[in-house]
Image (cartoon, rainbow, N blue to C red; front, side, top):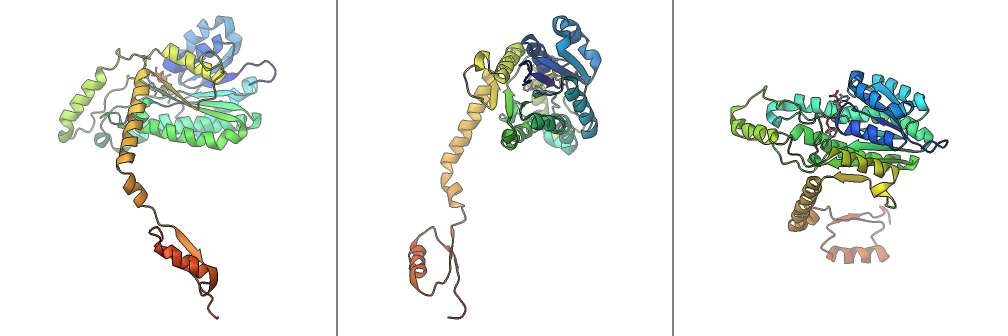
Length: 329
Ligand SMILES: NC(=O)c1ccc[n+]([C@@H]2O[C@H](COP(=O)([O-])OP(=O)(O)OC[C@H]3O[C@@H](n4cnc5c(N)ncnc54)[C@H](OP(=O)(O)O)[C@@H]3O)[C@@H](O)[C@H]2O)c1
């Protein structure tokens, strides 16, 4: 947060539509400054014109998160130079490329990860030096409940990319906490945004065995747009509340995770319960596969070590012993 005027500087990726656009407008409406980025600045014309009242708090930059670390660094350097800081980075840019895993192969997986994972990390790595220098900052990563609900055919590339975002966010949080940088991992369910279901289902490598499953999966995914229950405005109001510690977040501890949507909550609980059930049913196997404790005794010939060894050998948990004895005694 800027020490001079108490407002935050946000940098948000993918603000042409959807969550990113809403987050930008809401942060502006709360009095913060926003660097809104998009692949095409033309798509931000209406954001600029609707921000008349706070035009001095809005800055637009062109940023494609797949443009590579050097190009991204240039944009982030320019962003940081504009108001001298970046307080909140929202890694929102992302999309889904539906298709069956075997039909798409690793090429489609790489394509999906390029934006959702590597793009997100390139932007983060370019921003962290500024946050470390400030000794403060918040990184918001838009993950997905699909990282938890991974059993839907056709969503493998997307859900695995979001699962990577989840894991990276959690590790990053532990690595940057020392610099007073927080990470918020957001897991939305299905929200009615403009472009998330805009991609064609991949049918470029049809494998006959998958025909029935592919058809069912295409049908299932086609039925989603328009039926999403989540309101993206409410979701982004909640996100901005959490980052600013006000509204629904006032007086609450920093959550680290923000789950948005009833469907997301249900999916995550369901997954957690399933994993607990499996753990309970197979706990004996999990515990039984431990390497037994290695005990190391020196000078076994006489004294205390020998008697500990004698007792240990009787223990069922101790079939690994490293016994040493002086050579010349
Ligand atoms: N809506 C949901 O139900 C839902 C659920 C869970 C998670 N999410 C996540 O929420 C985030 C926002 O999605 P949304 O629902 O708001 O969909 P959206 O309306 O399609 O917005 C996606 C934004 O990402 C941008 N984008 C895509 N590729 C980009 C790239 N290479 N570089 C820069 N910007 C890029 C798009 O820009 P262009 O206009 O240039 O394409 C657009 O501004 C995504 O990460 C998505 O995975 C959405």
